[in-house]
Length: 153
Image (cartoon, rainbow, N blue to C red; front, side, top):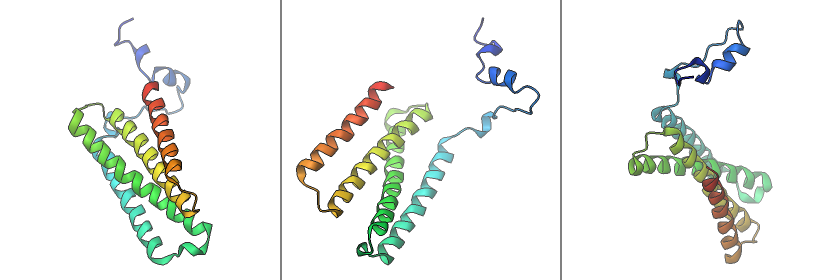
């Protein structure tokens, strides 16, 4: 069986199962490219940046846990967008990697971990529970999570 055989097509078995049901595999032009990725990420980062600005100017933290939760969620997504964009462009410039999905996957994962770390520190600080050893243990745990994902792939 050669590599050009239809059995090697990722959609071959799905076509057999969905035969006659109007299944059309996605066209190559509709794939994720770096322009679609960056424009979507920039748009969502700007939306959460505006939400963060509105929350900062209008809501007081003394209003309760809902205000703090909304503030932390907007900080999380705003930071995630900024860090993911920075990491994506640095990886594309540094590695010259043509595999877009490898850069995207790693950038998003590390952005989520970094944003989660910062928001965890902010939550502990808001509850007045943050000490330097807690921040150190939290940082080491996020590093271990990243190392787990890095060795798994």
